[in-house]
Image 1: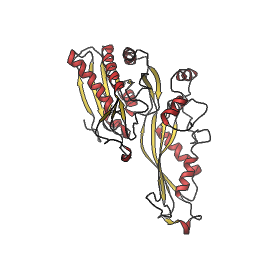
Image 2: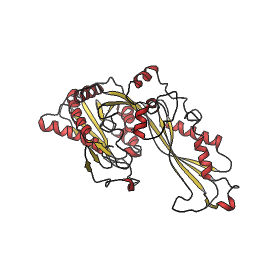
Image 3: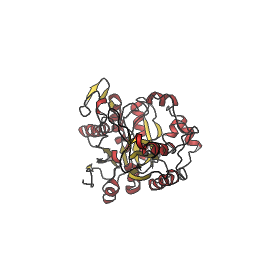
Image 4: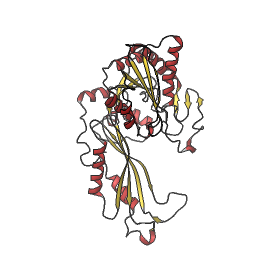
Length: 393
């Protein structure tokens, strides 16, 4: 189905009048492979090593899409499918589902369902099944800083012309205070307060400060000290610098005072933040702090809304029971730090709640070289999806 960008792939099996309808969501696009020199295998040649399948998209999320297809196929080979079924596979999730906001309203009746099974999430670990009930939103920008109209000789003009790279570094350094709190004016005004109950529930998760240190390999954690790492990555908004570019970056030396500098900036947003308001807050910060020695420009790239799923829906209960059957333990519930724009779009446009699960693990190297999928967890998820479909009937 054309969207104005990469097409949406649709399919259905609607042979059970009166039975619930499950919409299966997935995306077939992937992140770039760069830096390709760090890959130990060819990124688009799937290679099995031990319990892992290495390839770009193996975990995020072609492997998860195949888990749903394999579960559906297994049921269809053994009898009637217990519920009605629809598939929505999009091709632009990794760039913010930029055309889905126009596409879905035109086809909202087609994609209506009782529940959406979305395996574009993951588990805390291979032994700890997880249901994600919240996603952060996203606002992504480029900040361009301009100085002289051309690169200058750093010896002739350094010290008398403000270097745009230095000005940019000073501006982005000031976007957090010493506590890691974002300093954009009004940034937290609409942020929903973390309740005592959520603090208690999150404290029960096995995601400890030590586990974050182990997963990331950093010497120490950073951020708002009044919140645990799990709350910082799920219930609190962030501002991150995703990339920097200025001046001479090739081999060897070139003594220039660059004409411009650029930073890619993303904000992860929580209920009830609005990407358009965050853009205004970023611009207000720059108006108040940018020196007169440079000019600047903010270019919005894309945004994505936050989403919270009702955990009392029949679909979530069916997932919960299915995962307990396969893993032999109740799943954990958590808010996820990432963003999947279509989840909120399905809620707001089609009235469909999503259950976010999947076989992705924290050490799968998603978005990085040597992405991999843990095959034993992948097989467990297939079994869980089979139980889920029968639990929904």
